[in-house]
Length: 79
Image 1 (spheres, rainbow, N blue to C red):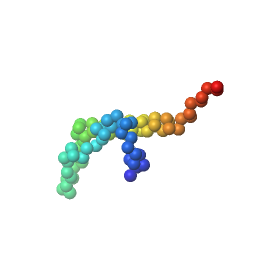
Image 2: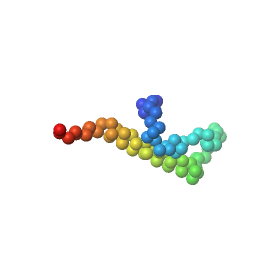
Image 3: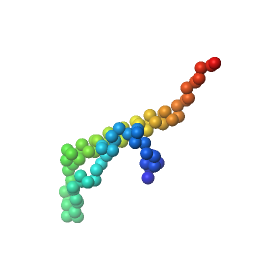
Image 4: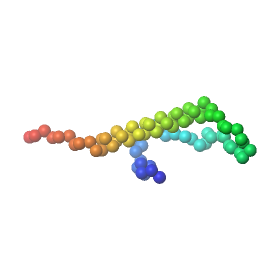
């Protein structure tokens, strides 16, 4: 388990969950007798692209959160 999975940061996510892999749509089954190399369909390639984009989006959101967390506090004007 990854540490970030312990924290629920749903307010920072922008529909990232719908880009993730969904195993219920996976209909391919491999058997021992299958000797040919499998070919990816356009749908599978599109799902891989969406997953990659979701990963990049998560990294950008985490980086923005970390930058905000460790940013220097604003300096108060002298009174």
